[in-house]
Image (cartoon, rainbow, N blue to C red; front, side, top):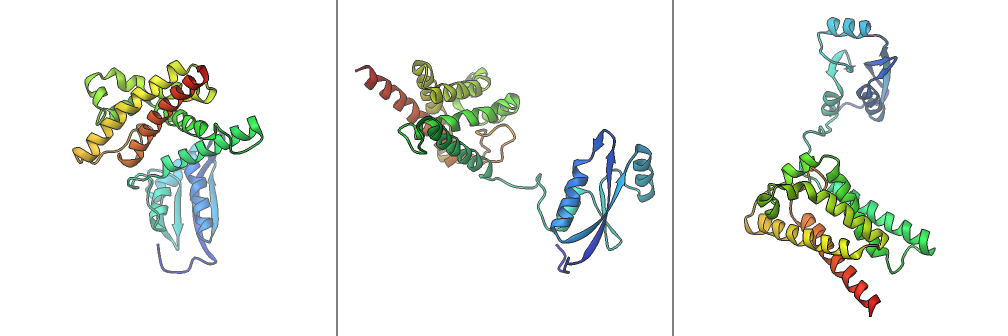
Amino acid sequence: MTNETTANRSATLYRMDMPGHLCPFGLKSRYLLRRQGYQVEDHKLRSRQEVESFKKKHDVDTTPQTFIDGERIGGYESLRQYFGKASAEDEGLSYRPVIALFLVAALMALSISWATAGSVITGRTLEWFVAGAMTLLGLQKLKDVEAFSSMFLNYDLLAQRYVGYAYLYPFGETLAGLLMIAGALVWISAPVALFIGSVGAASVFKAVYIDKRSLKCACVGGDSKVPLGFVSLTENLMMIGMGIWMIARAALHNV
């Protein structure tokens, strides 16, 4: 980012705002400029003819386009770079997606506890947290099973022998999580959690701690930038622990 103060400075933005199409990157560019303290001269391109005329005049291929001090900065990603902000495509490995997911799962567990017992902490709060996390993780994988399976095949030992397992995994994890939230059909949910958790834990341990491979984890889907390692192992150990607990609890109730 330039060292000059941005106070009371102005920028000129050209963006598409046509009937039926409002450019999201134009809105993001305006938002970013205002956050950086710029007064924005906002030019809305209202028709395809205006857009094409603008692109031809400035010899550019896309809009939006931002100009600061008479200098063309470019589109939204170029504007982010101008202000020293990394492009989303350039961001490296990060635990943020899985941290956010576990945080939401914890809040869901507390919400369920409050709704069912009038207290944020009950005897089942931890169960609901683990089961909720499993369900959310499964949902992330289900968004694009094909992409998940491709990443999963890099390290899962069973999937490498039986490719179909990579396609079944997201459905098994989601189903087990949902059944555990409901406390129903333990004879299905517990064995599924135990099986996929055990295979997953062994696979992650071998890939990371024995083979010393640097891989991305498919735990939050095929577009994940979460590094394979401790978090992946934790996910699988949680499933193993939950499976054992559900079986033990069901056995105690039948005594």
